[in-house]
Image (cartoon, rainbow, N blue to C red):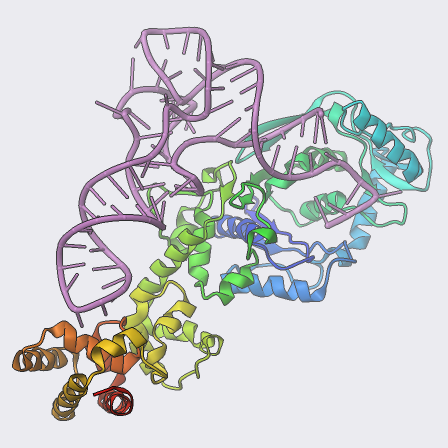
Length: 472
RNA sequence: GACCCCGUCGUCUAGCCUGGCCAAGGACGCGACCCUUUCAAGGUCGAGAUCGCGGGUUCGAAUCCCGCCGGGGUCACCA
């Protein structure tokens, strides 16, 4: 198929996967999936000093967690720039042979002086071209750029962007030591991997005319270009660590569902009418790069958490239990063995926690007995009268035929009537005994989930606590 | 500094191409009320944008044109 879409995400492994990078990866992935094309992952590791295998692993893990699976890329060899050096060499040689590139041996000090001079004249630095026609056969290899004219980037998001050649210089393709530069590698890689659409960060837009000229020098067609805007911090500068957590991993560890993260990242800059909540399938179905906004977007934690909550609420309890399981140790709880129990507990917790972590924090009492009681509430409810009421509740609970929320509610309503008490008083009293606090999911559901035995044990423990602590 | 991008409620955005349906719609957040065994969730209502500013074109401009201002990004033998 000649029209098949081929896109790529090309992170440089100099750190963890940043949310901005994740969004770029997502847009590429969505575009590929929407068009039934190919999503390629390529590692730009030519900066050996800052690239590490640990970072590569972390990036791959983050992409896997987000569910952005790639059709081509690691661990298959050939998708790391350091493995592709001969390819760059061949292309460099072709450009040199055709005269589109030439060697330059200008010493760095000289260039530095010229750069400063240009700045003093308030101009963009542009290499003088001194070595253009010296016919050197060593040094740094530079691309010959036409003196006059313009190059226009036909961006899918920004529309046509015109650059004057006067502002472009004969940039370096290959360094004196023989290593290729990033801009050259990108072009050669995109060409040889037959990339049809380059979707990348806005920060690359100024490099694009140089690259287009390189494509042309090589005699290759220029792929479609789409420059996605940057993700901003609250101060509207590019989002960075100084704005707080920015690595995808941090959001995973905070207990944000991957689907919610994907939903949020997609909505940051892209929209489809008034819809806010999207499943992965809907995103694939509806996404189009043309609908991506051209302006920068501030990262909003509150909205991410809201979306996280929305996704959690819609999640099947059993699936939710699976995803929550790894978070037990993180909140200091023993991971339970009974999956069905966790699912039942979670079903009552869904509305009350925005992240997996919060779910467990809010519902920790399901997994451990209260280690104490909220002091203010204990003062109010854990009185001698309270103890008597707990005893009465216990007696009835012991003989309740089936511990269902409905049966429990009748039990409480009847008892309340007999004792001349409002439901809320008995409920709060019990809640305190069962959970140690005054806020929880609906009491009768909590009771039903905990089960008769566990509930009775906690009611007994509360009575004992009152006996030893409360004053007459 | 030069070049490039961007500029609608605090934030994400719809609308802009194909002027009038926009005295600008939705969402997050915020406030109030309702519901209610607590906490949430949910529902209803509300505050919140003279569409960066100034000119122009037009019967009519958020939408078209020009100028300006503000913010950001890029300017390496880094990626």
